[in-house]
Length: 133
Image (tube, rainbow, N blue to C red):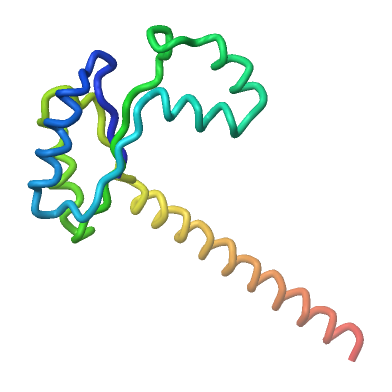
C-alpha cells in the first residue's frame, strides 16, 4: 500500500505519522520516502524527468512525501487503508482497490476469447480433415 502526505507536512508530523503506523496491528513494515528522495529516484530513471526535475528546488518540488506500507493480513488491507486515511496530513491512500474486479473482468473476457478460438480452430480443423481425407 502506498500513501501520500500533504505537501506542507513537517518533519515532526512525519515522525508522528510513522509512530501511528507502527502502532497499527496490521502494519508489518513501512518505508518512508521524502519528496526530495522521490525526485532524485525519478530523475535517475529517465533523461526527460531529469531535465525537468533538475530545475526544481525544494520549494518548487510538487511531488509528495510517501509511505509504503506492507500489511500482515491482506484481507484486512481495506480497513487498514481506511484507518490511515483518517490520519491528519494523509492526502491519499492507494492499495490496488478495484484491481480484483478488473482482473475478474479480464479473465472472463479472456475465457470467452479462448472458447471462441477453440471453436474456430476445431471447426477449421474439421473442415480441413473432411476436405483432405
